[in-house]
Image 1 (cartoon, helix red, strand yellow):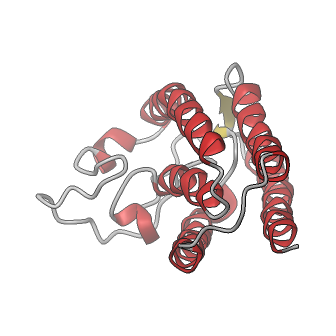
Image 2 (cartoon, one colour):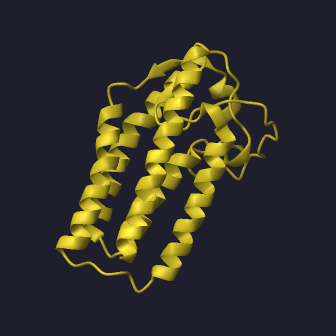
Length: 199
């Protein structure tokens, strides 16, 4: 019962995000935004959909139970959700699951984007570990962590290339790490900018 509620809430969250992404996509394209990465997007959607299917099957068919460390994992999961909301709200109408760039737009440097380039991708990577571990679904964790690394190795270069071509991304973010803060450089305090960091 706990498992079904947990999975149900996450799936509901993802569906809600897709609805928001569709609205944001329509608005951005009405402003003249361009879409990139159409070739790998179906694979990305397939990986995230399959994650839930594999997770449910592993837990139900192999009789996985709630982890003994669930309080720690739940706390980490709640933390990632707070960070997720922070990242998405920082991007506002410019957040999307697709790579959609508005030519000439400034780059978002508020919220977690003051610290790293791709906070949402980092959050998703952590979720793909924490969610399965909540119910000892080690097979799901291993497979989809590797698949996520593979798709991000295609996704992030494509997104950064599009941002470099259509915005001042390289200038604004040259001193920030992709997933880990660059402690050798001070964060820029600017907050009047736009970027896409997609799920």
